[in-house]
Structure formats: C-alpha cells, structure tokens
View 1 (cartoon, protein in one colour):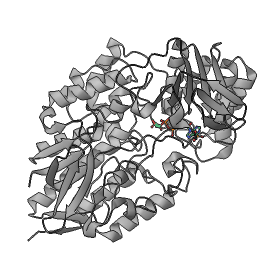
View 2 (cartoon, helix red, strand yellow):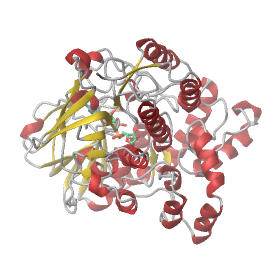
View 3 (spheres, protein in one colour):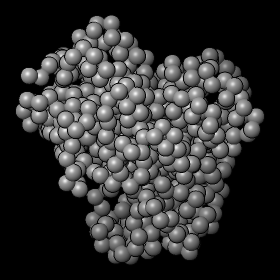
Length: 530
Ligand code: NA7
C-alpha cells in the first residue's frame, strides 16, 4: 500500500481533508490537476472573482492561531487574496510536501481482493491507497454551450472557470461576455471599465442585489478576534453556515412603508443576508416574494438610465431564490457607460460564431475577445469524468446515469472505501462549512474503521436509498430552487434532471451523522480483507 488515504483536489475541502487525515495519523497523498492549490479559487481567477460569503465565515475555523494570524482585507475577499490565504494555510501546516500539483487523475479502480484503490494520473504515475477521497468540487468542469463555429473564432476566448494565469488585457479591445450568472456579473463591471467596448449576451436576467463589500476596519478586525468563539458557535451550528440571523417577521406583518424601509435595509446589507435574513415568508409565499422582487425592479430602474436596458435586466417570471442569487458591485451602473451594450438572447438568439465575432438573428458583431461565463457541469461533473470504477468494474458515470445517489453526500453503494465530501448532495449554503462537516465525518469514519480493525467500508444500499429519496423529495418542496436552476443539472444538455445539493440542509446532515454514530455505523458494511 502506497498510502492510507489518497485525496484528489487541493481546493478548500481537499486541503482540509489532507490536514485532518494526516493529524489522525494516516499517510496521505494529495493529487491536484492545477499548477497550484486553491481549486475553484485557483481556476476562477477572472477579474472581479470574489467571495459572496464573508471572508471570515468562508475561511477555516479549525485553528484559532490561523484565524488570529490572517487578516482578511475585505469583508468579501477577491480571488488573489483567497489564493494567497490557501497557500498560506498549506505552508502554515506544512502540507505542501504531501501535495502533488499538475497531476490530473485519469482513472481510479477498486481492487476487491486487496480492498484498495489503484489511481493513475495523466503523467503515468500510479498510486495505491486504502481509501480514496475525491474532493474534486462541484464547480470544476466548465460548460461551453454547443454554439456552431466556436472553434473558428480567430480572437481570444476564455471561460471564467479556466481563466489564464497571465492577465487578459482588455484595454482597447472589443469584448463579448456570454452569460450573466454569478461569474458574469462579477466580471462585467471590471471589463466595462477597461475595454473599448463590451457587449453582454444575456439569456436570463437574474435577481442581482449589491454585495456591499468594504474593507475590514482595524476595529472590526479586533472585534472578529475578540468574538472568535461566538462566531464559531454560530457558524458551526447555523442551518446555512452563515452569520446572518433569521428575521422575526413575515412580509405582511409590516405596513407598506415599513416594508419599503426594511427592504432598503436588506438592499444595504451584506451578501446573502438578503436571502437568509429577509422576511420569513420570502421563499414560501409568492405574494411576499413578489414584493421583494418589485422593490429590486424599482432599484434597477432607478440605477439604469436607459429604460429599455433596465427592462431587459429585470427578471420576468422568476421568483427571488429560484436561482442562486448573484451579488454585484457596480453591475447595473456599468450599463450606463457609453461603451457597454446588452443583447437579449431571448429576442435575438446566437446563430453561430464566425471567424471574427458573434452572429445573432440580428446580424454579426466583431470581437477581439469572447468571454464564456456560461457556468459548469455542477455537482457530478468532475467525479463522472475521473474514470472511477467500483466493485465488479462498475463505472461511476454508469452508476449515476440517472443522477447521483449517495448517503450523506459522502459515499455511494458499490464503491467501497471511496468518499467524496463537497460533492453532490453536499452543501446548500456557505460551502466550506458544510464541506468541513463532511470532512470531519469522513475522517472520524476512517479512524473508526482503522481502530476497529476493519479494512473496508461501504454504505448499505438501503441507507443510500433513504438519503437519496429524502434529497429528491425535499428538493421539490419550498423553499426549493426552480426547475431551471443548475442545481438540478438542467443547464447541461442531456444531463438527467436530478437534485444535486442536500435539500435536507445542514440540520438533516447533523442528525444523520449523529444517528450513524449512535447506531455504531449500522448504515455501513464493514469488513476485513483476507
Ligand atoms: P451560472 O450561474 O450557471 O451562469 C451561467 C450563465 O451562462 C447563465 O447566465 C446562463 O444563462 C448562461 N448561459 C449558459 N448557456 C448559455 C447559452 N447557450 N447561451 C447564452 N447564455 C448561456 O454560472 P456562473 O459561473 O455564473 O456561477 C456558478 C457559481 O459560481 C455560482 O452559483 C456561485 O456559486 C459561484 P441561463 O441563466 O441558463 O439562461
């Protein structure tokens, strides 16, 4: 056996998994496809990429010393600072010598007689590990729409999720951005300020609200440190993993003028509080949701000078929270610049790309740079492309042909000793908090297996079915995401429509983990190899 635990992916989850497994006394090797650590925060280095969760709620909480040493500059850190932080963590805890970057896993095969995994990477290197932990992330496979002629375009093309290490120079260039999800709306104001012209190709407008970022003042830094324990208590127990506390009133408990005043407070509040601290019935009552949407629509009309452009930017037939809400800084304002224009793809769809630009039903427009902000094969994308073969040689992509089936979003039946924290059926909120819960549970499970003299652990299919049924059933009930949300995989042509988050949320995860412990791991099959 080369190592006890082989971790794939050096994002937030993989780095933490490496740390926890090593601290638990396992020999560990981590393989990372990128040339540096950071995962999502390595690849998504487009200008404007930043947290939508408060920096101090997104970073690690396992070490008080780490928290005290690292002063985040802004409430919502930008990508370069995040990448620096993750590199600092890796060095601070001496993890780098167990990380091999530039090594993409191409196959992982379960050896039934040995109860171990054989993992092969694209450089031909081969590893044997008792346990395989894929921390490959949910947003790691970029999606390019199948638009005819894409390969023929002669200018530069970049996807936000594969941004080059060398900065892209927009100065004096004619730029197109396709896609207005969370990534597109972060990037657009930055490009607008640099490029000669920017044309935004929008298929669906989303309910964008201000991020309300700001530098963290010295007083706030001191407060954060003074209240570390209190903050951890909230973050480690909250349903969504955020600091924002729920509101205590429903929409129509307040009179119209009070609602306007409250919505204004929400508009001025930081990040996700618009979702988590808004009126309690926001996601449950259509009339309540419509009130908040009308408030945002009015804000958009107030910011955007051209009424036609404003109208295009206002979502129609989409409730707030139907999709993951994007957060913006100067986004709507960007459309007031003379060099920025908006193309509504519902009115004039893209026909094809040409060697020089983009052709819609309204004609062709030439570009020097085209940016694809068109999202990802969310949730299962990385896992189903890694050549994972379980018992009897079954391919994970076949096992999940109708969508993922998991237990706690960490294991699937037929794939012993294989775990995937931070994968499908994981988070529904502030990702690192959920993924951290999963890593803690995976690590405790590995320790349990080792300390009880077992070699293999595999979830009981009945336990997997129970959990998956819960995920699928609850995904259809309020406060649910909409049917067209990429959380159902519907953005990828041909992908089965199946819920990809944990619709039971963190409370359900905690409850089930406690049950596993209380019942002495009854949900798993444990065995000793010969
Ligand atoms: P998203 O949120 O999936 O957004 C992708 C965007 O690309 C969205 O506006 C899509 O429009 C658009 N898109 C996708 N396919 C096409 C085609 N064929 N033509 C035009 N436009 C298209 O990805 P992001 O990278 O922005 O955000 C991902 C996550 O990163 C986010 O949730 C945060 O967690 C951070 P659509 O809305 O489908 O009509």
